Image 1: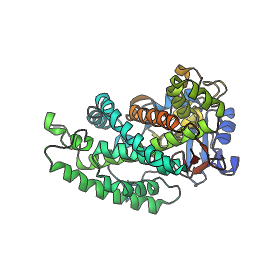
Image 2 (image 1 turned 90 degrees about the vertical axis):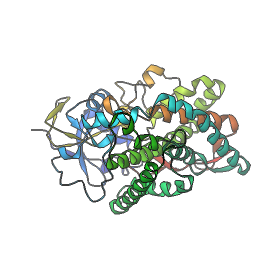
Image 3 (image 1 turned 30 degrees about the horizontal axis):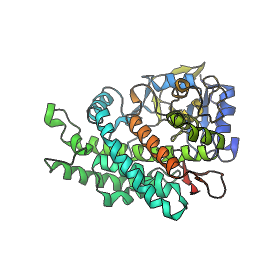
Image 4 (image 1 turned 180 degrees about the vertical axis):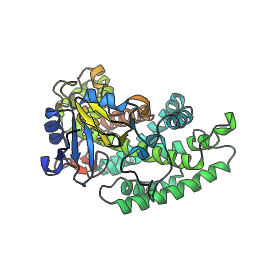
Length: 399
């Protein structure tokens, strides 16, 4: 029988949601797998080591479909359509292949010029004020503009999506989150129907391409799958990139020696983005997995039907993989830095990783070039937002 001792995460730091790393480090030093209770009261088996996490991310016994959970009752009132993060092969294979053939490297490359225009427009608007919140002024509107344009969401609805996303990802507010998800699903159903009525969409309209995909070979996404896919791309593809840009900017501005090195050598930018992804990942963990059979990891047996959390944030700071992992270092060996697990591993590796990297590189390069005196305005202590992801509530800067 597995060890049923449950670690109370809230007891480790006093506020696990704000600074989880001391708890991760303390637990990891005692072993890579633990049964834990989160401050919300939920319990799960948590995988913390890099080697173990990487293996678990690709383990077919770690299922995404909630119906493998021993606690499964129903999909719940606010299910918002099946998507790649809620399915396993063969369903996942089919869904991913349909999206991947539209979400191509060519399509991402074609976005580069438009992303640069959006970056420049936002920085132009920021300039005269000399100070402000980087998230409100830049880190939030940039990815939102990009993902909404990619999916063909009208610009007038961008603010509505921002409000929905914040509510959906809020911790400890299931009713509010559920209602926001339901409202977004209704909106997306209407938008999909509009796309279906249009023969010729604007260039680059991914959602229209997915709606029309069946015209080529007869395979297509159902309405439920389209809603789920659009929801996944909008929420995951937007909010995580907001966090990446803001987290990376905060790390550079609070590590002046690293910022100085980057300003002296712009060639370090790509590795700086990767190091930010490792050190402060936009999402602390992958989505829940559920074991389809008992699974033994590092001598610990996780029972069948158990909920499993793979801690990407902990794995990315595992000293067995990354020397001096608690140090933010943009000079770290690029091959080692890129072995972080922030975008996952295996068949569920993030499809939008190239787009997120492109946005972050363009955004940070332009931000630092435009404002050579960029600095944190006031208290440098980070104001982390309680969320399922890992992002700042605000980042006041002066320039």
